[in-house]
Image (cartoon, rainbow over all chains, first blue to last red; front, top):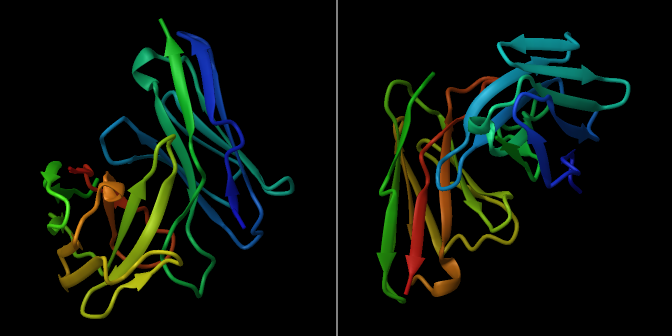
Length: 114
Length: 116
């Protein structure tokens, strides 16, 4: 049972446009979410997070939106740059009281075309 | 952010031999480290959770006798792939967390293992 889902395996956008990466979750106990970026043959790097007490968190060109009622979050990148081309994973830490392991989505490959 | 160093970044070994991969947290103590394997087409598969001073917890379907994990200190966890076979060729990634809830995980650079 996949508790964190990224239903789009890939996304292609034009440089300068907005990239929107989506993530859905099923466990209503999740209260914190993270986005990671991964280049080929490298480990993921942390990008941005959001707590369930917020519905938006912004950091430069990156904004994450959280819709708790829909159990949906999205990462917006604007303007998109070719260097943003990578795989993006959303992840959720376990609910309080359980262990620390993150639950990852399967990732979305973003390609930003010059 | 915190730094996690993984070594080696690439290794080629012969079938039947064992390979050890190290994961170190350089500027923090990691009570918990995780080992992932990345399969083709992006997905990260959690293999095991490594807790300092205790036995690792393996995910379902992961052979603990084949993938030996040791977490001897708060800054070092090792993954040993024993009697490696070509199907073990993959990209292995470790991560470390400082502990506590809602803490982000910091990832190593990954190790590309090729078994010939």
